[in-house]
Image (tube, rainbow, N blue to C red; front, top):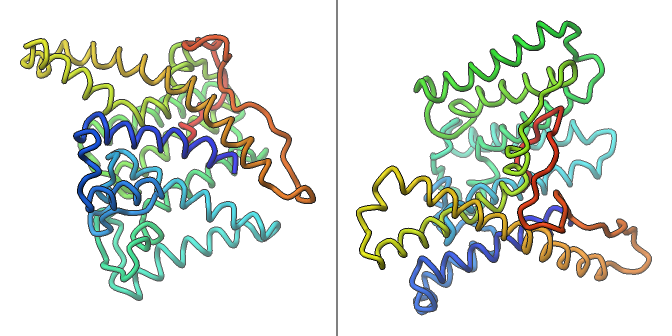
Length: 320
C-alpha cells in the first residue's frame, strides 16, 4: 500500500501532463485508440503487448514501472508464506521466466522478444527483466548477512573500484548493449554487489548534490521528457529552433528538468502521495491491522530544493 501510494500518484499526473503538454492537449483524447492507450497506461497494463518491453504507453518511460509493480506484487505475495517466502519467490520466478516460456515457445533472455501469449500481461510475467529484480533481492540478502564481509579495508577499496570500473567498461566499451540480465543487467549487478558488500567495511561518502539528486530521481525520471519538451517548444516559439540541436541545449534542458523534478517531488511525491496513503489507510476496516501513518519524506519539507547532508554507506537504488 505504501509503495503504491508513492509510485502511482506521481506516475498518473506525469502521464496526464505528457498527454496534455506533448500529445496535442485535449485533442489527444478525441480518438478511441488514444483513450484506450491512456487508460491502459494509468492501470499499468501494456497498451500494445506486442511492442515488448515498451508497450506503447502514453508516457514512454512508464514501461519500467509496469515491471516494478509486478515484482512488488509477487514479492508481497511471497511474504505471506513467512519462512518459505524465499523458496516461493524463487520458485515462482523460475516457473514464470524459465519453464513457461520453454513450454510455450522457447527460452530467450532477449527482453524484446514477443512470445505471442494469448494474454498480453504474460509478456511482463515471463520477462527476463524479472531476473534482475531477483538479483536485487539476492544482493540485499548478502548485504544483510553477517557472514558476507570483507575484513581488509584495502581489499574492500579494490573490490569497489574494480566493480565500478568493470560496469563502466562493459557498458561504455560496447561489451554489452541493450536492456536485460545478459546485457547491461549483469555488470550493473556486479557493481551494486561490490558497493553493497564493501560498504560494510569502508565508508562510501556520497556528495550532497548526489544525495539530493537521488532524492528527486523518481520525479526526474518521470518528468524529464515533459520538461525537455517544454524547453524545445519555447525555443521554437522564440525562433531559436536550431538551438535545440546544440550542445548548449543539454545544459538548459538539464537545469530545467532538475527544477521541474524538484517541484514534482515536493508537491506530488510528498504531498499527493501522503494524501492518497492516508485515504487508503482510512479505507481499511477498523478491526484490520494498520500501519501507523507517517509522512513519506525523503528530505525536509521546509524547502522545495533540499540539500541533505553527505550520506555514508550503501548507495540505494532509486525508489519507485
